[in-house]
Length: 240
Image 1 (cartoon, rainbow, N blue to C red):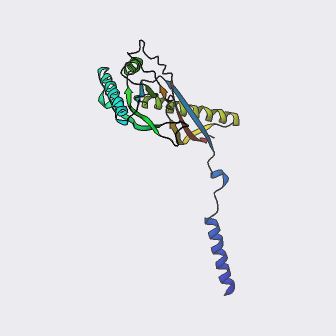
Image 2: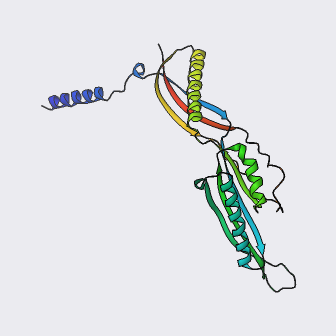
C-alpha cells in the first residue's frame, strides 16, 4: 500500500514539474531596442513681454499714485497699438518702504516708498514689438522684466520632431542589425520618451532710463530660433 502511495506522489510531482517548466530559449523572441531623437528649429511668431513702472517718493500715496498714472498711460498706448484686452494681464503690484542707512540714526528709518506696477503683454506680431516697447517707455515704463519668444501653435512643429525621432530610431535599428549580421523584423513596441518644446528665455530685470519724450528709435529685437525636441523608444523583432 505504501509503495502505491509513493508512486502516486512521484507521478503528481513529475506532472507539476512539467506544467511549470520554463519556455525554451528558442521560444523567447529576440529583439533589438533603440532610442530615437528628433529636433526641429523654427522661427517664433509671438512674444510675451513684462513691462512695468517703478516710482519712488517720500510718502506711500504719492509713489502709488505715480505708478498707477504711468500704468494707465501704458495701457492706453497698448490699446492704441492694437493690443487686445485679453492679451494683457496684470503682473507684480508692490509698495515697499525705503530705509535710510545713516550712521547718525540709532536704527533704520523709513526714508520713502517705492511703488512697482507691471503688466504682461502677449504680442502676436513680432514686427510690432520694437515699436511697442519704444512707445510704452515714452509713456513712463522704466522696467523690462522679461521677453519670452514662443509659438502661437507649436503642434505642427512638434509633430515633425516626433516623425524625425521615429525615423532616427528606425535608422539606428537597421544600422545595429546590419553590424550584428541580422535583419530587422516587425516593430513590437513604440513609446514616446518625452517631448520638450522651446525653453523660455527671459532677460534679467532691467531698469530703463525715464525719458521726457518717446525714444527716437524702435527697440531692436532679435528673436532667434526655437528648438523643439522629441524622443521615442522602439523595440523591433530580429528577423530570421
